[in-house]
Length: 99
Image 1 (cartoon, rainbow, N blue to C red):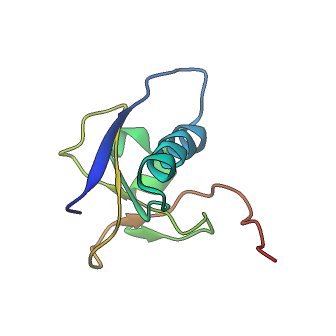
Image 2 (image 1 turned 45 degrees about the vertical axis):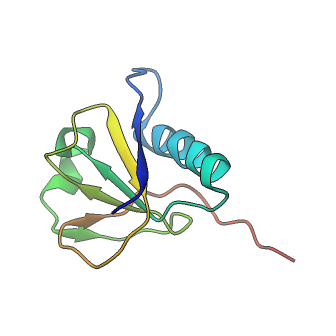
């Protein structure tokens, strides 16, 4: 990822999916296009996802990858450039269909 934003969200009342959605919404407003990649610290992911090298679920085209370089409660949001291992995708709900 060459271009992106670093988003901080430590609200204990909000789940990971909502935090990622907030960051993605801000990115889309700023760059007029949706992000395709979010990097998070492994401690941010549920324990059942940490043991799986790859887990894919529908999520509006956003891939969530664990990365120890990103501090906890921070989200590095941008666009993918190439395939990398340890992909964990978080479900952000059903995609809206465009007419």
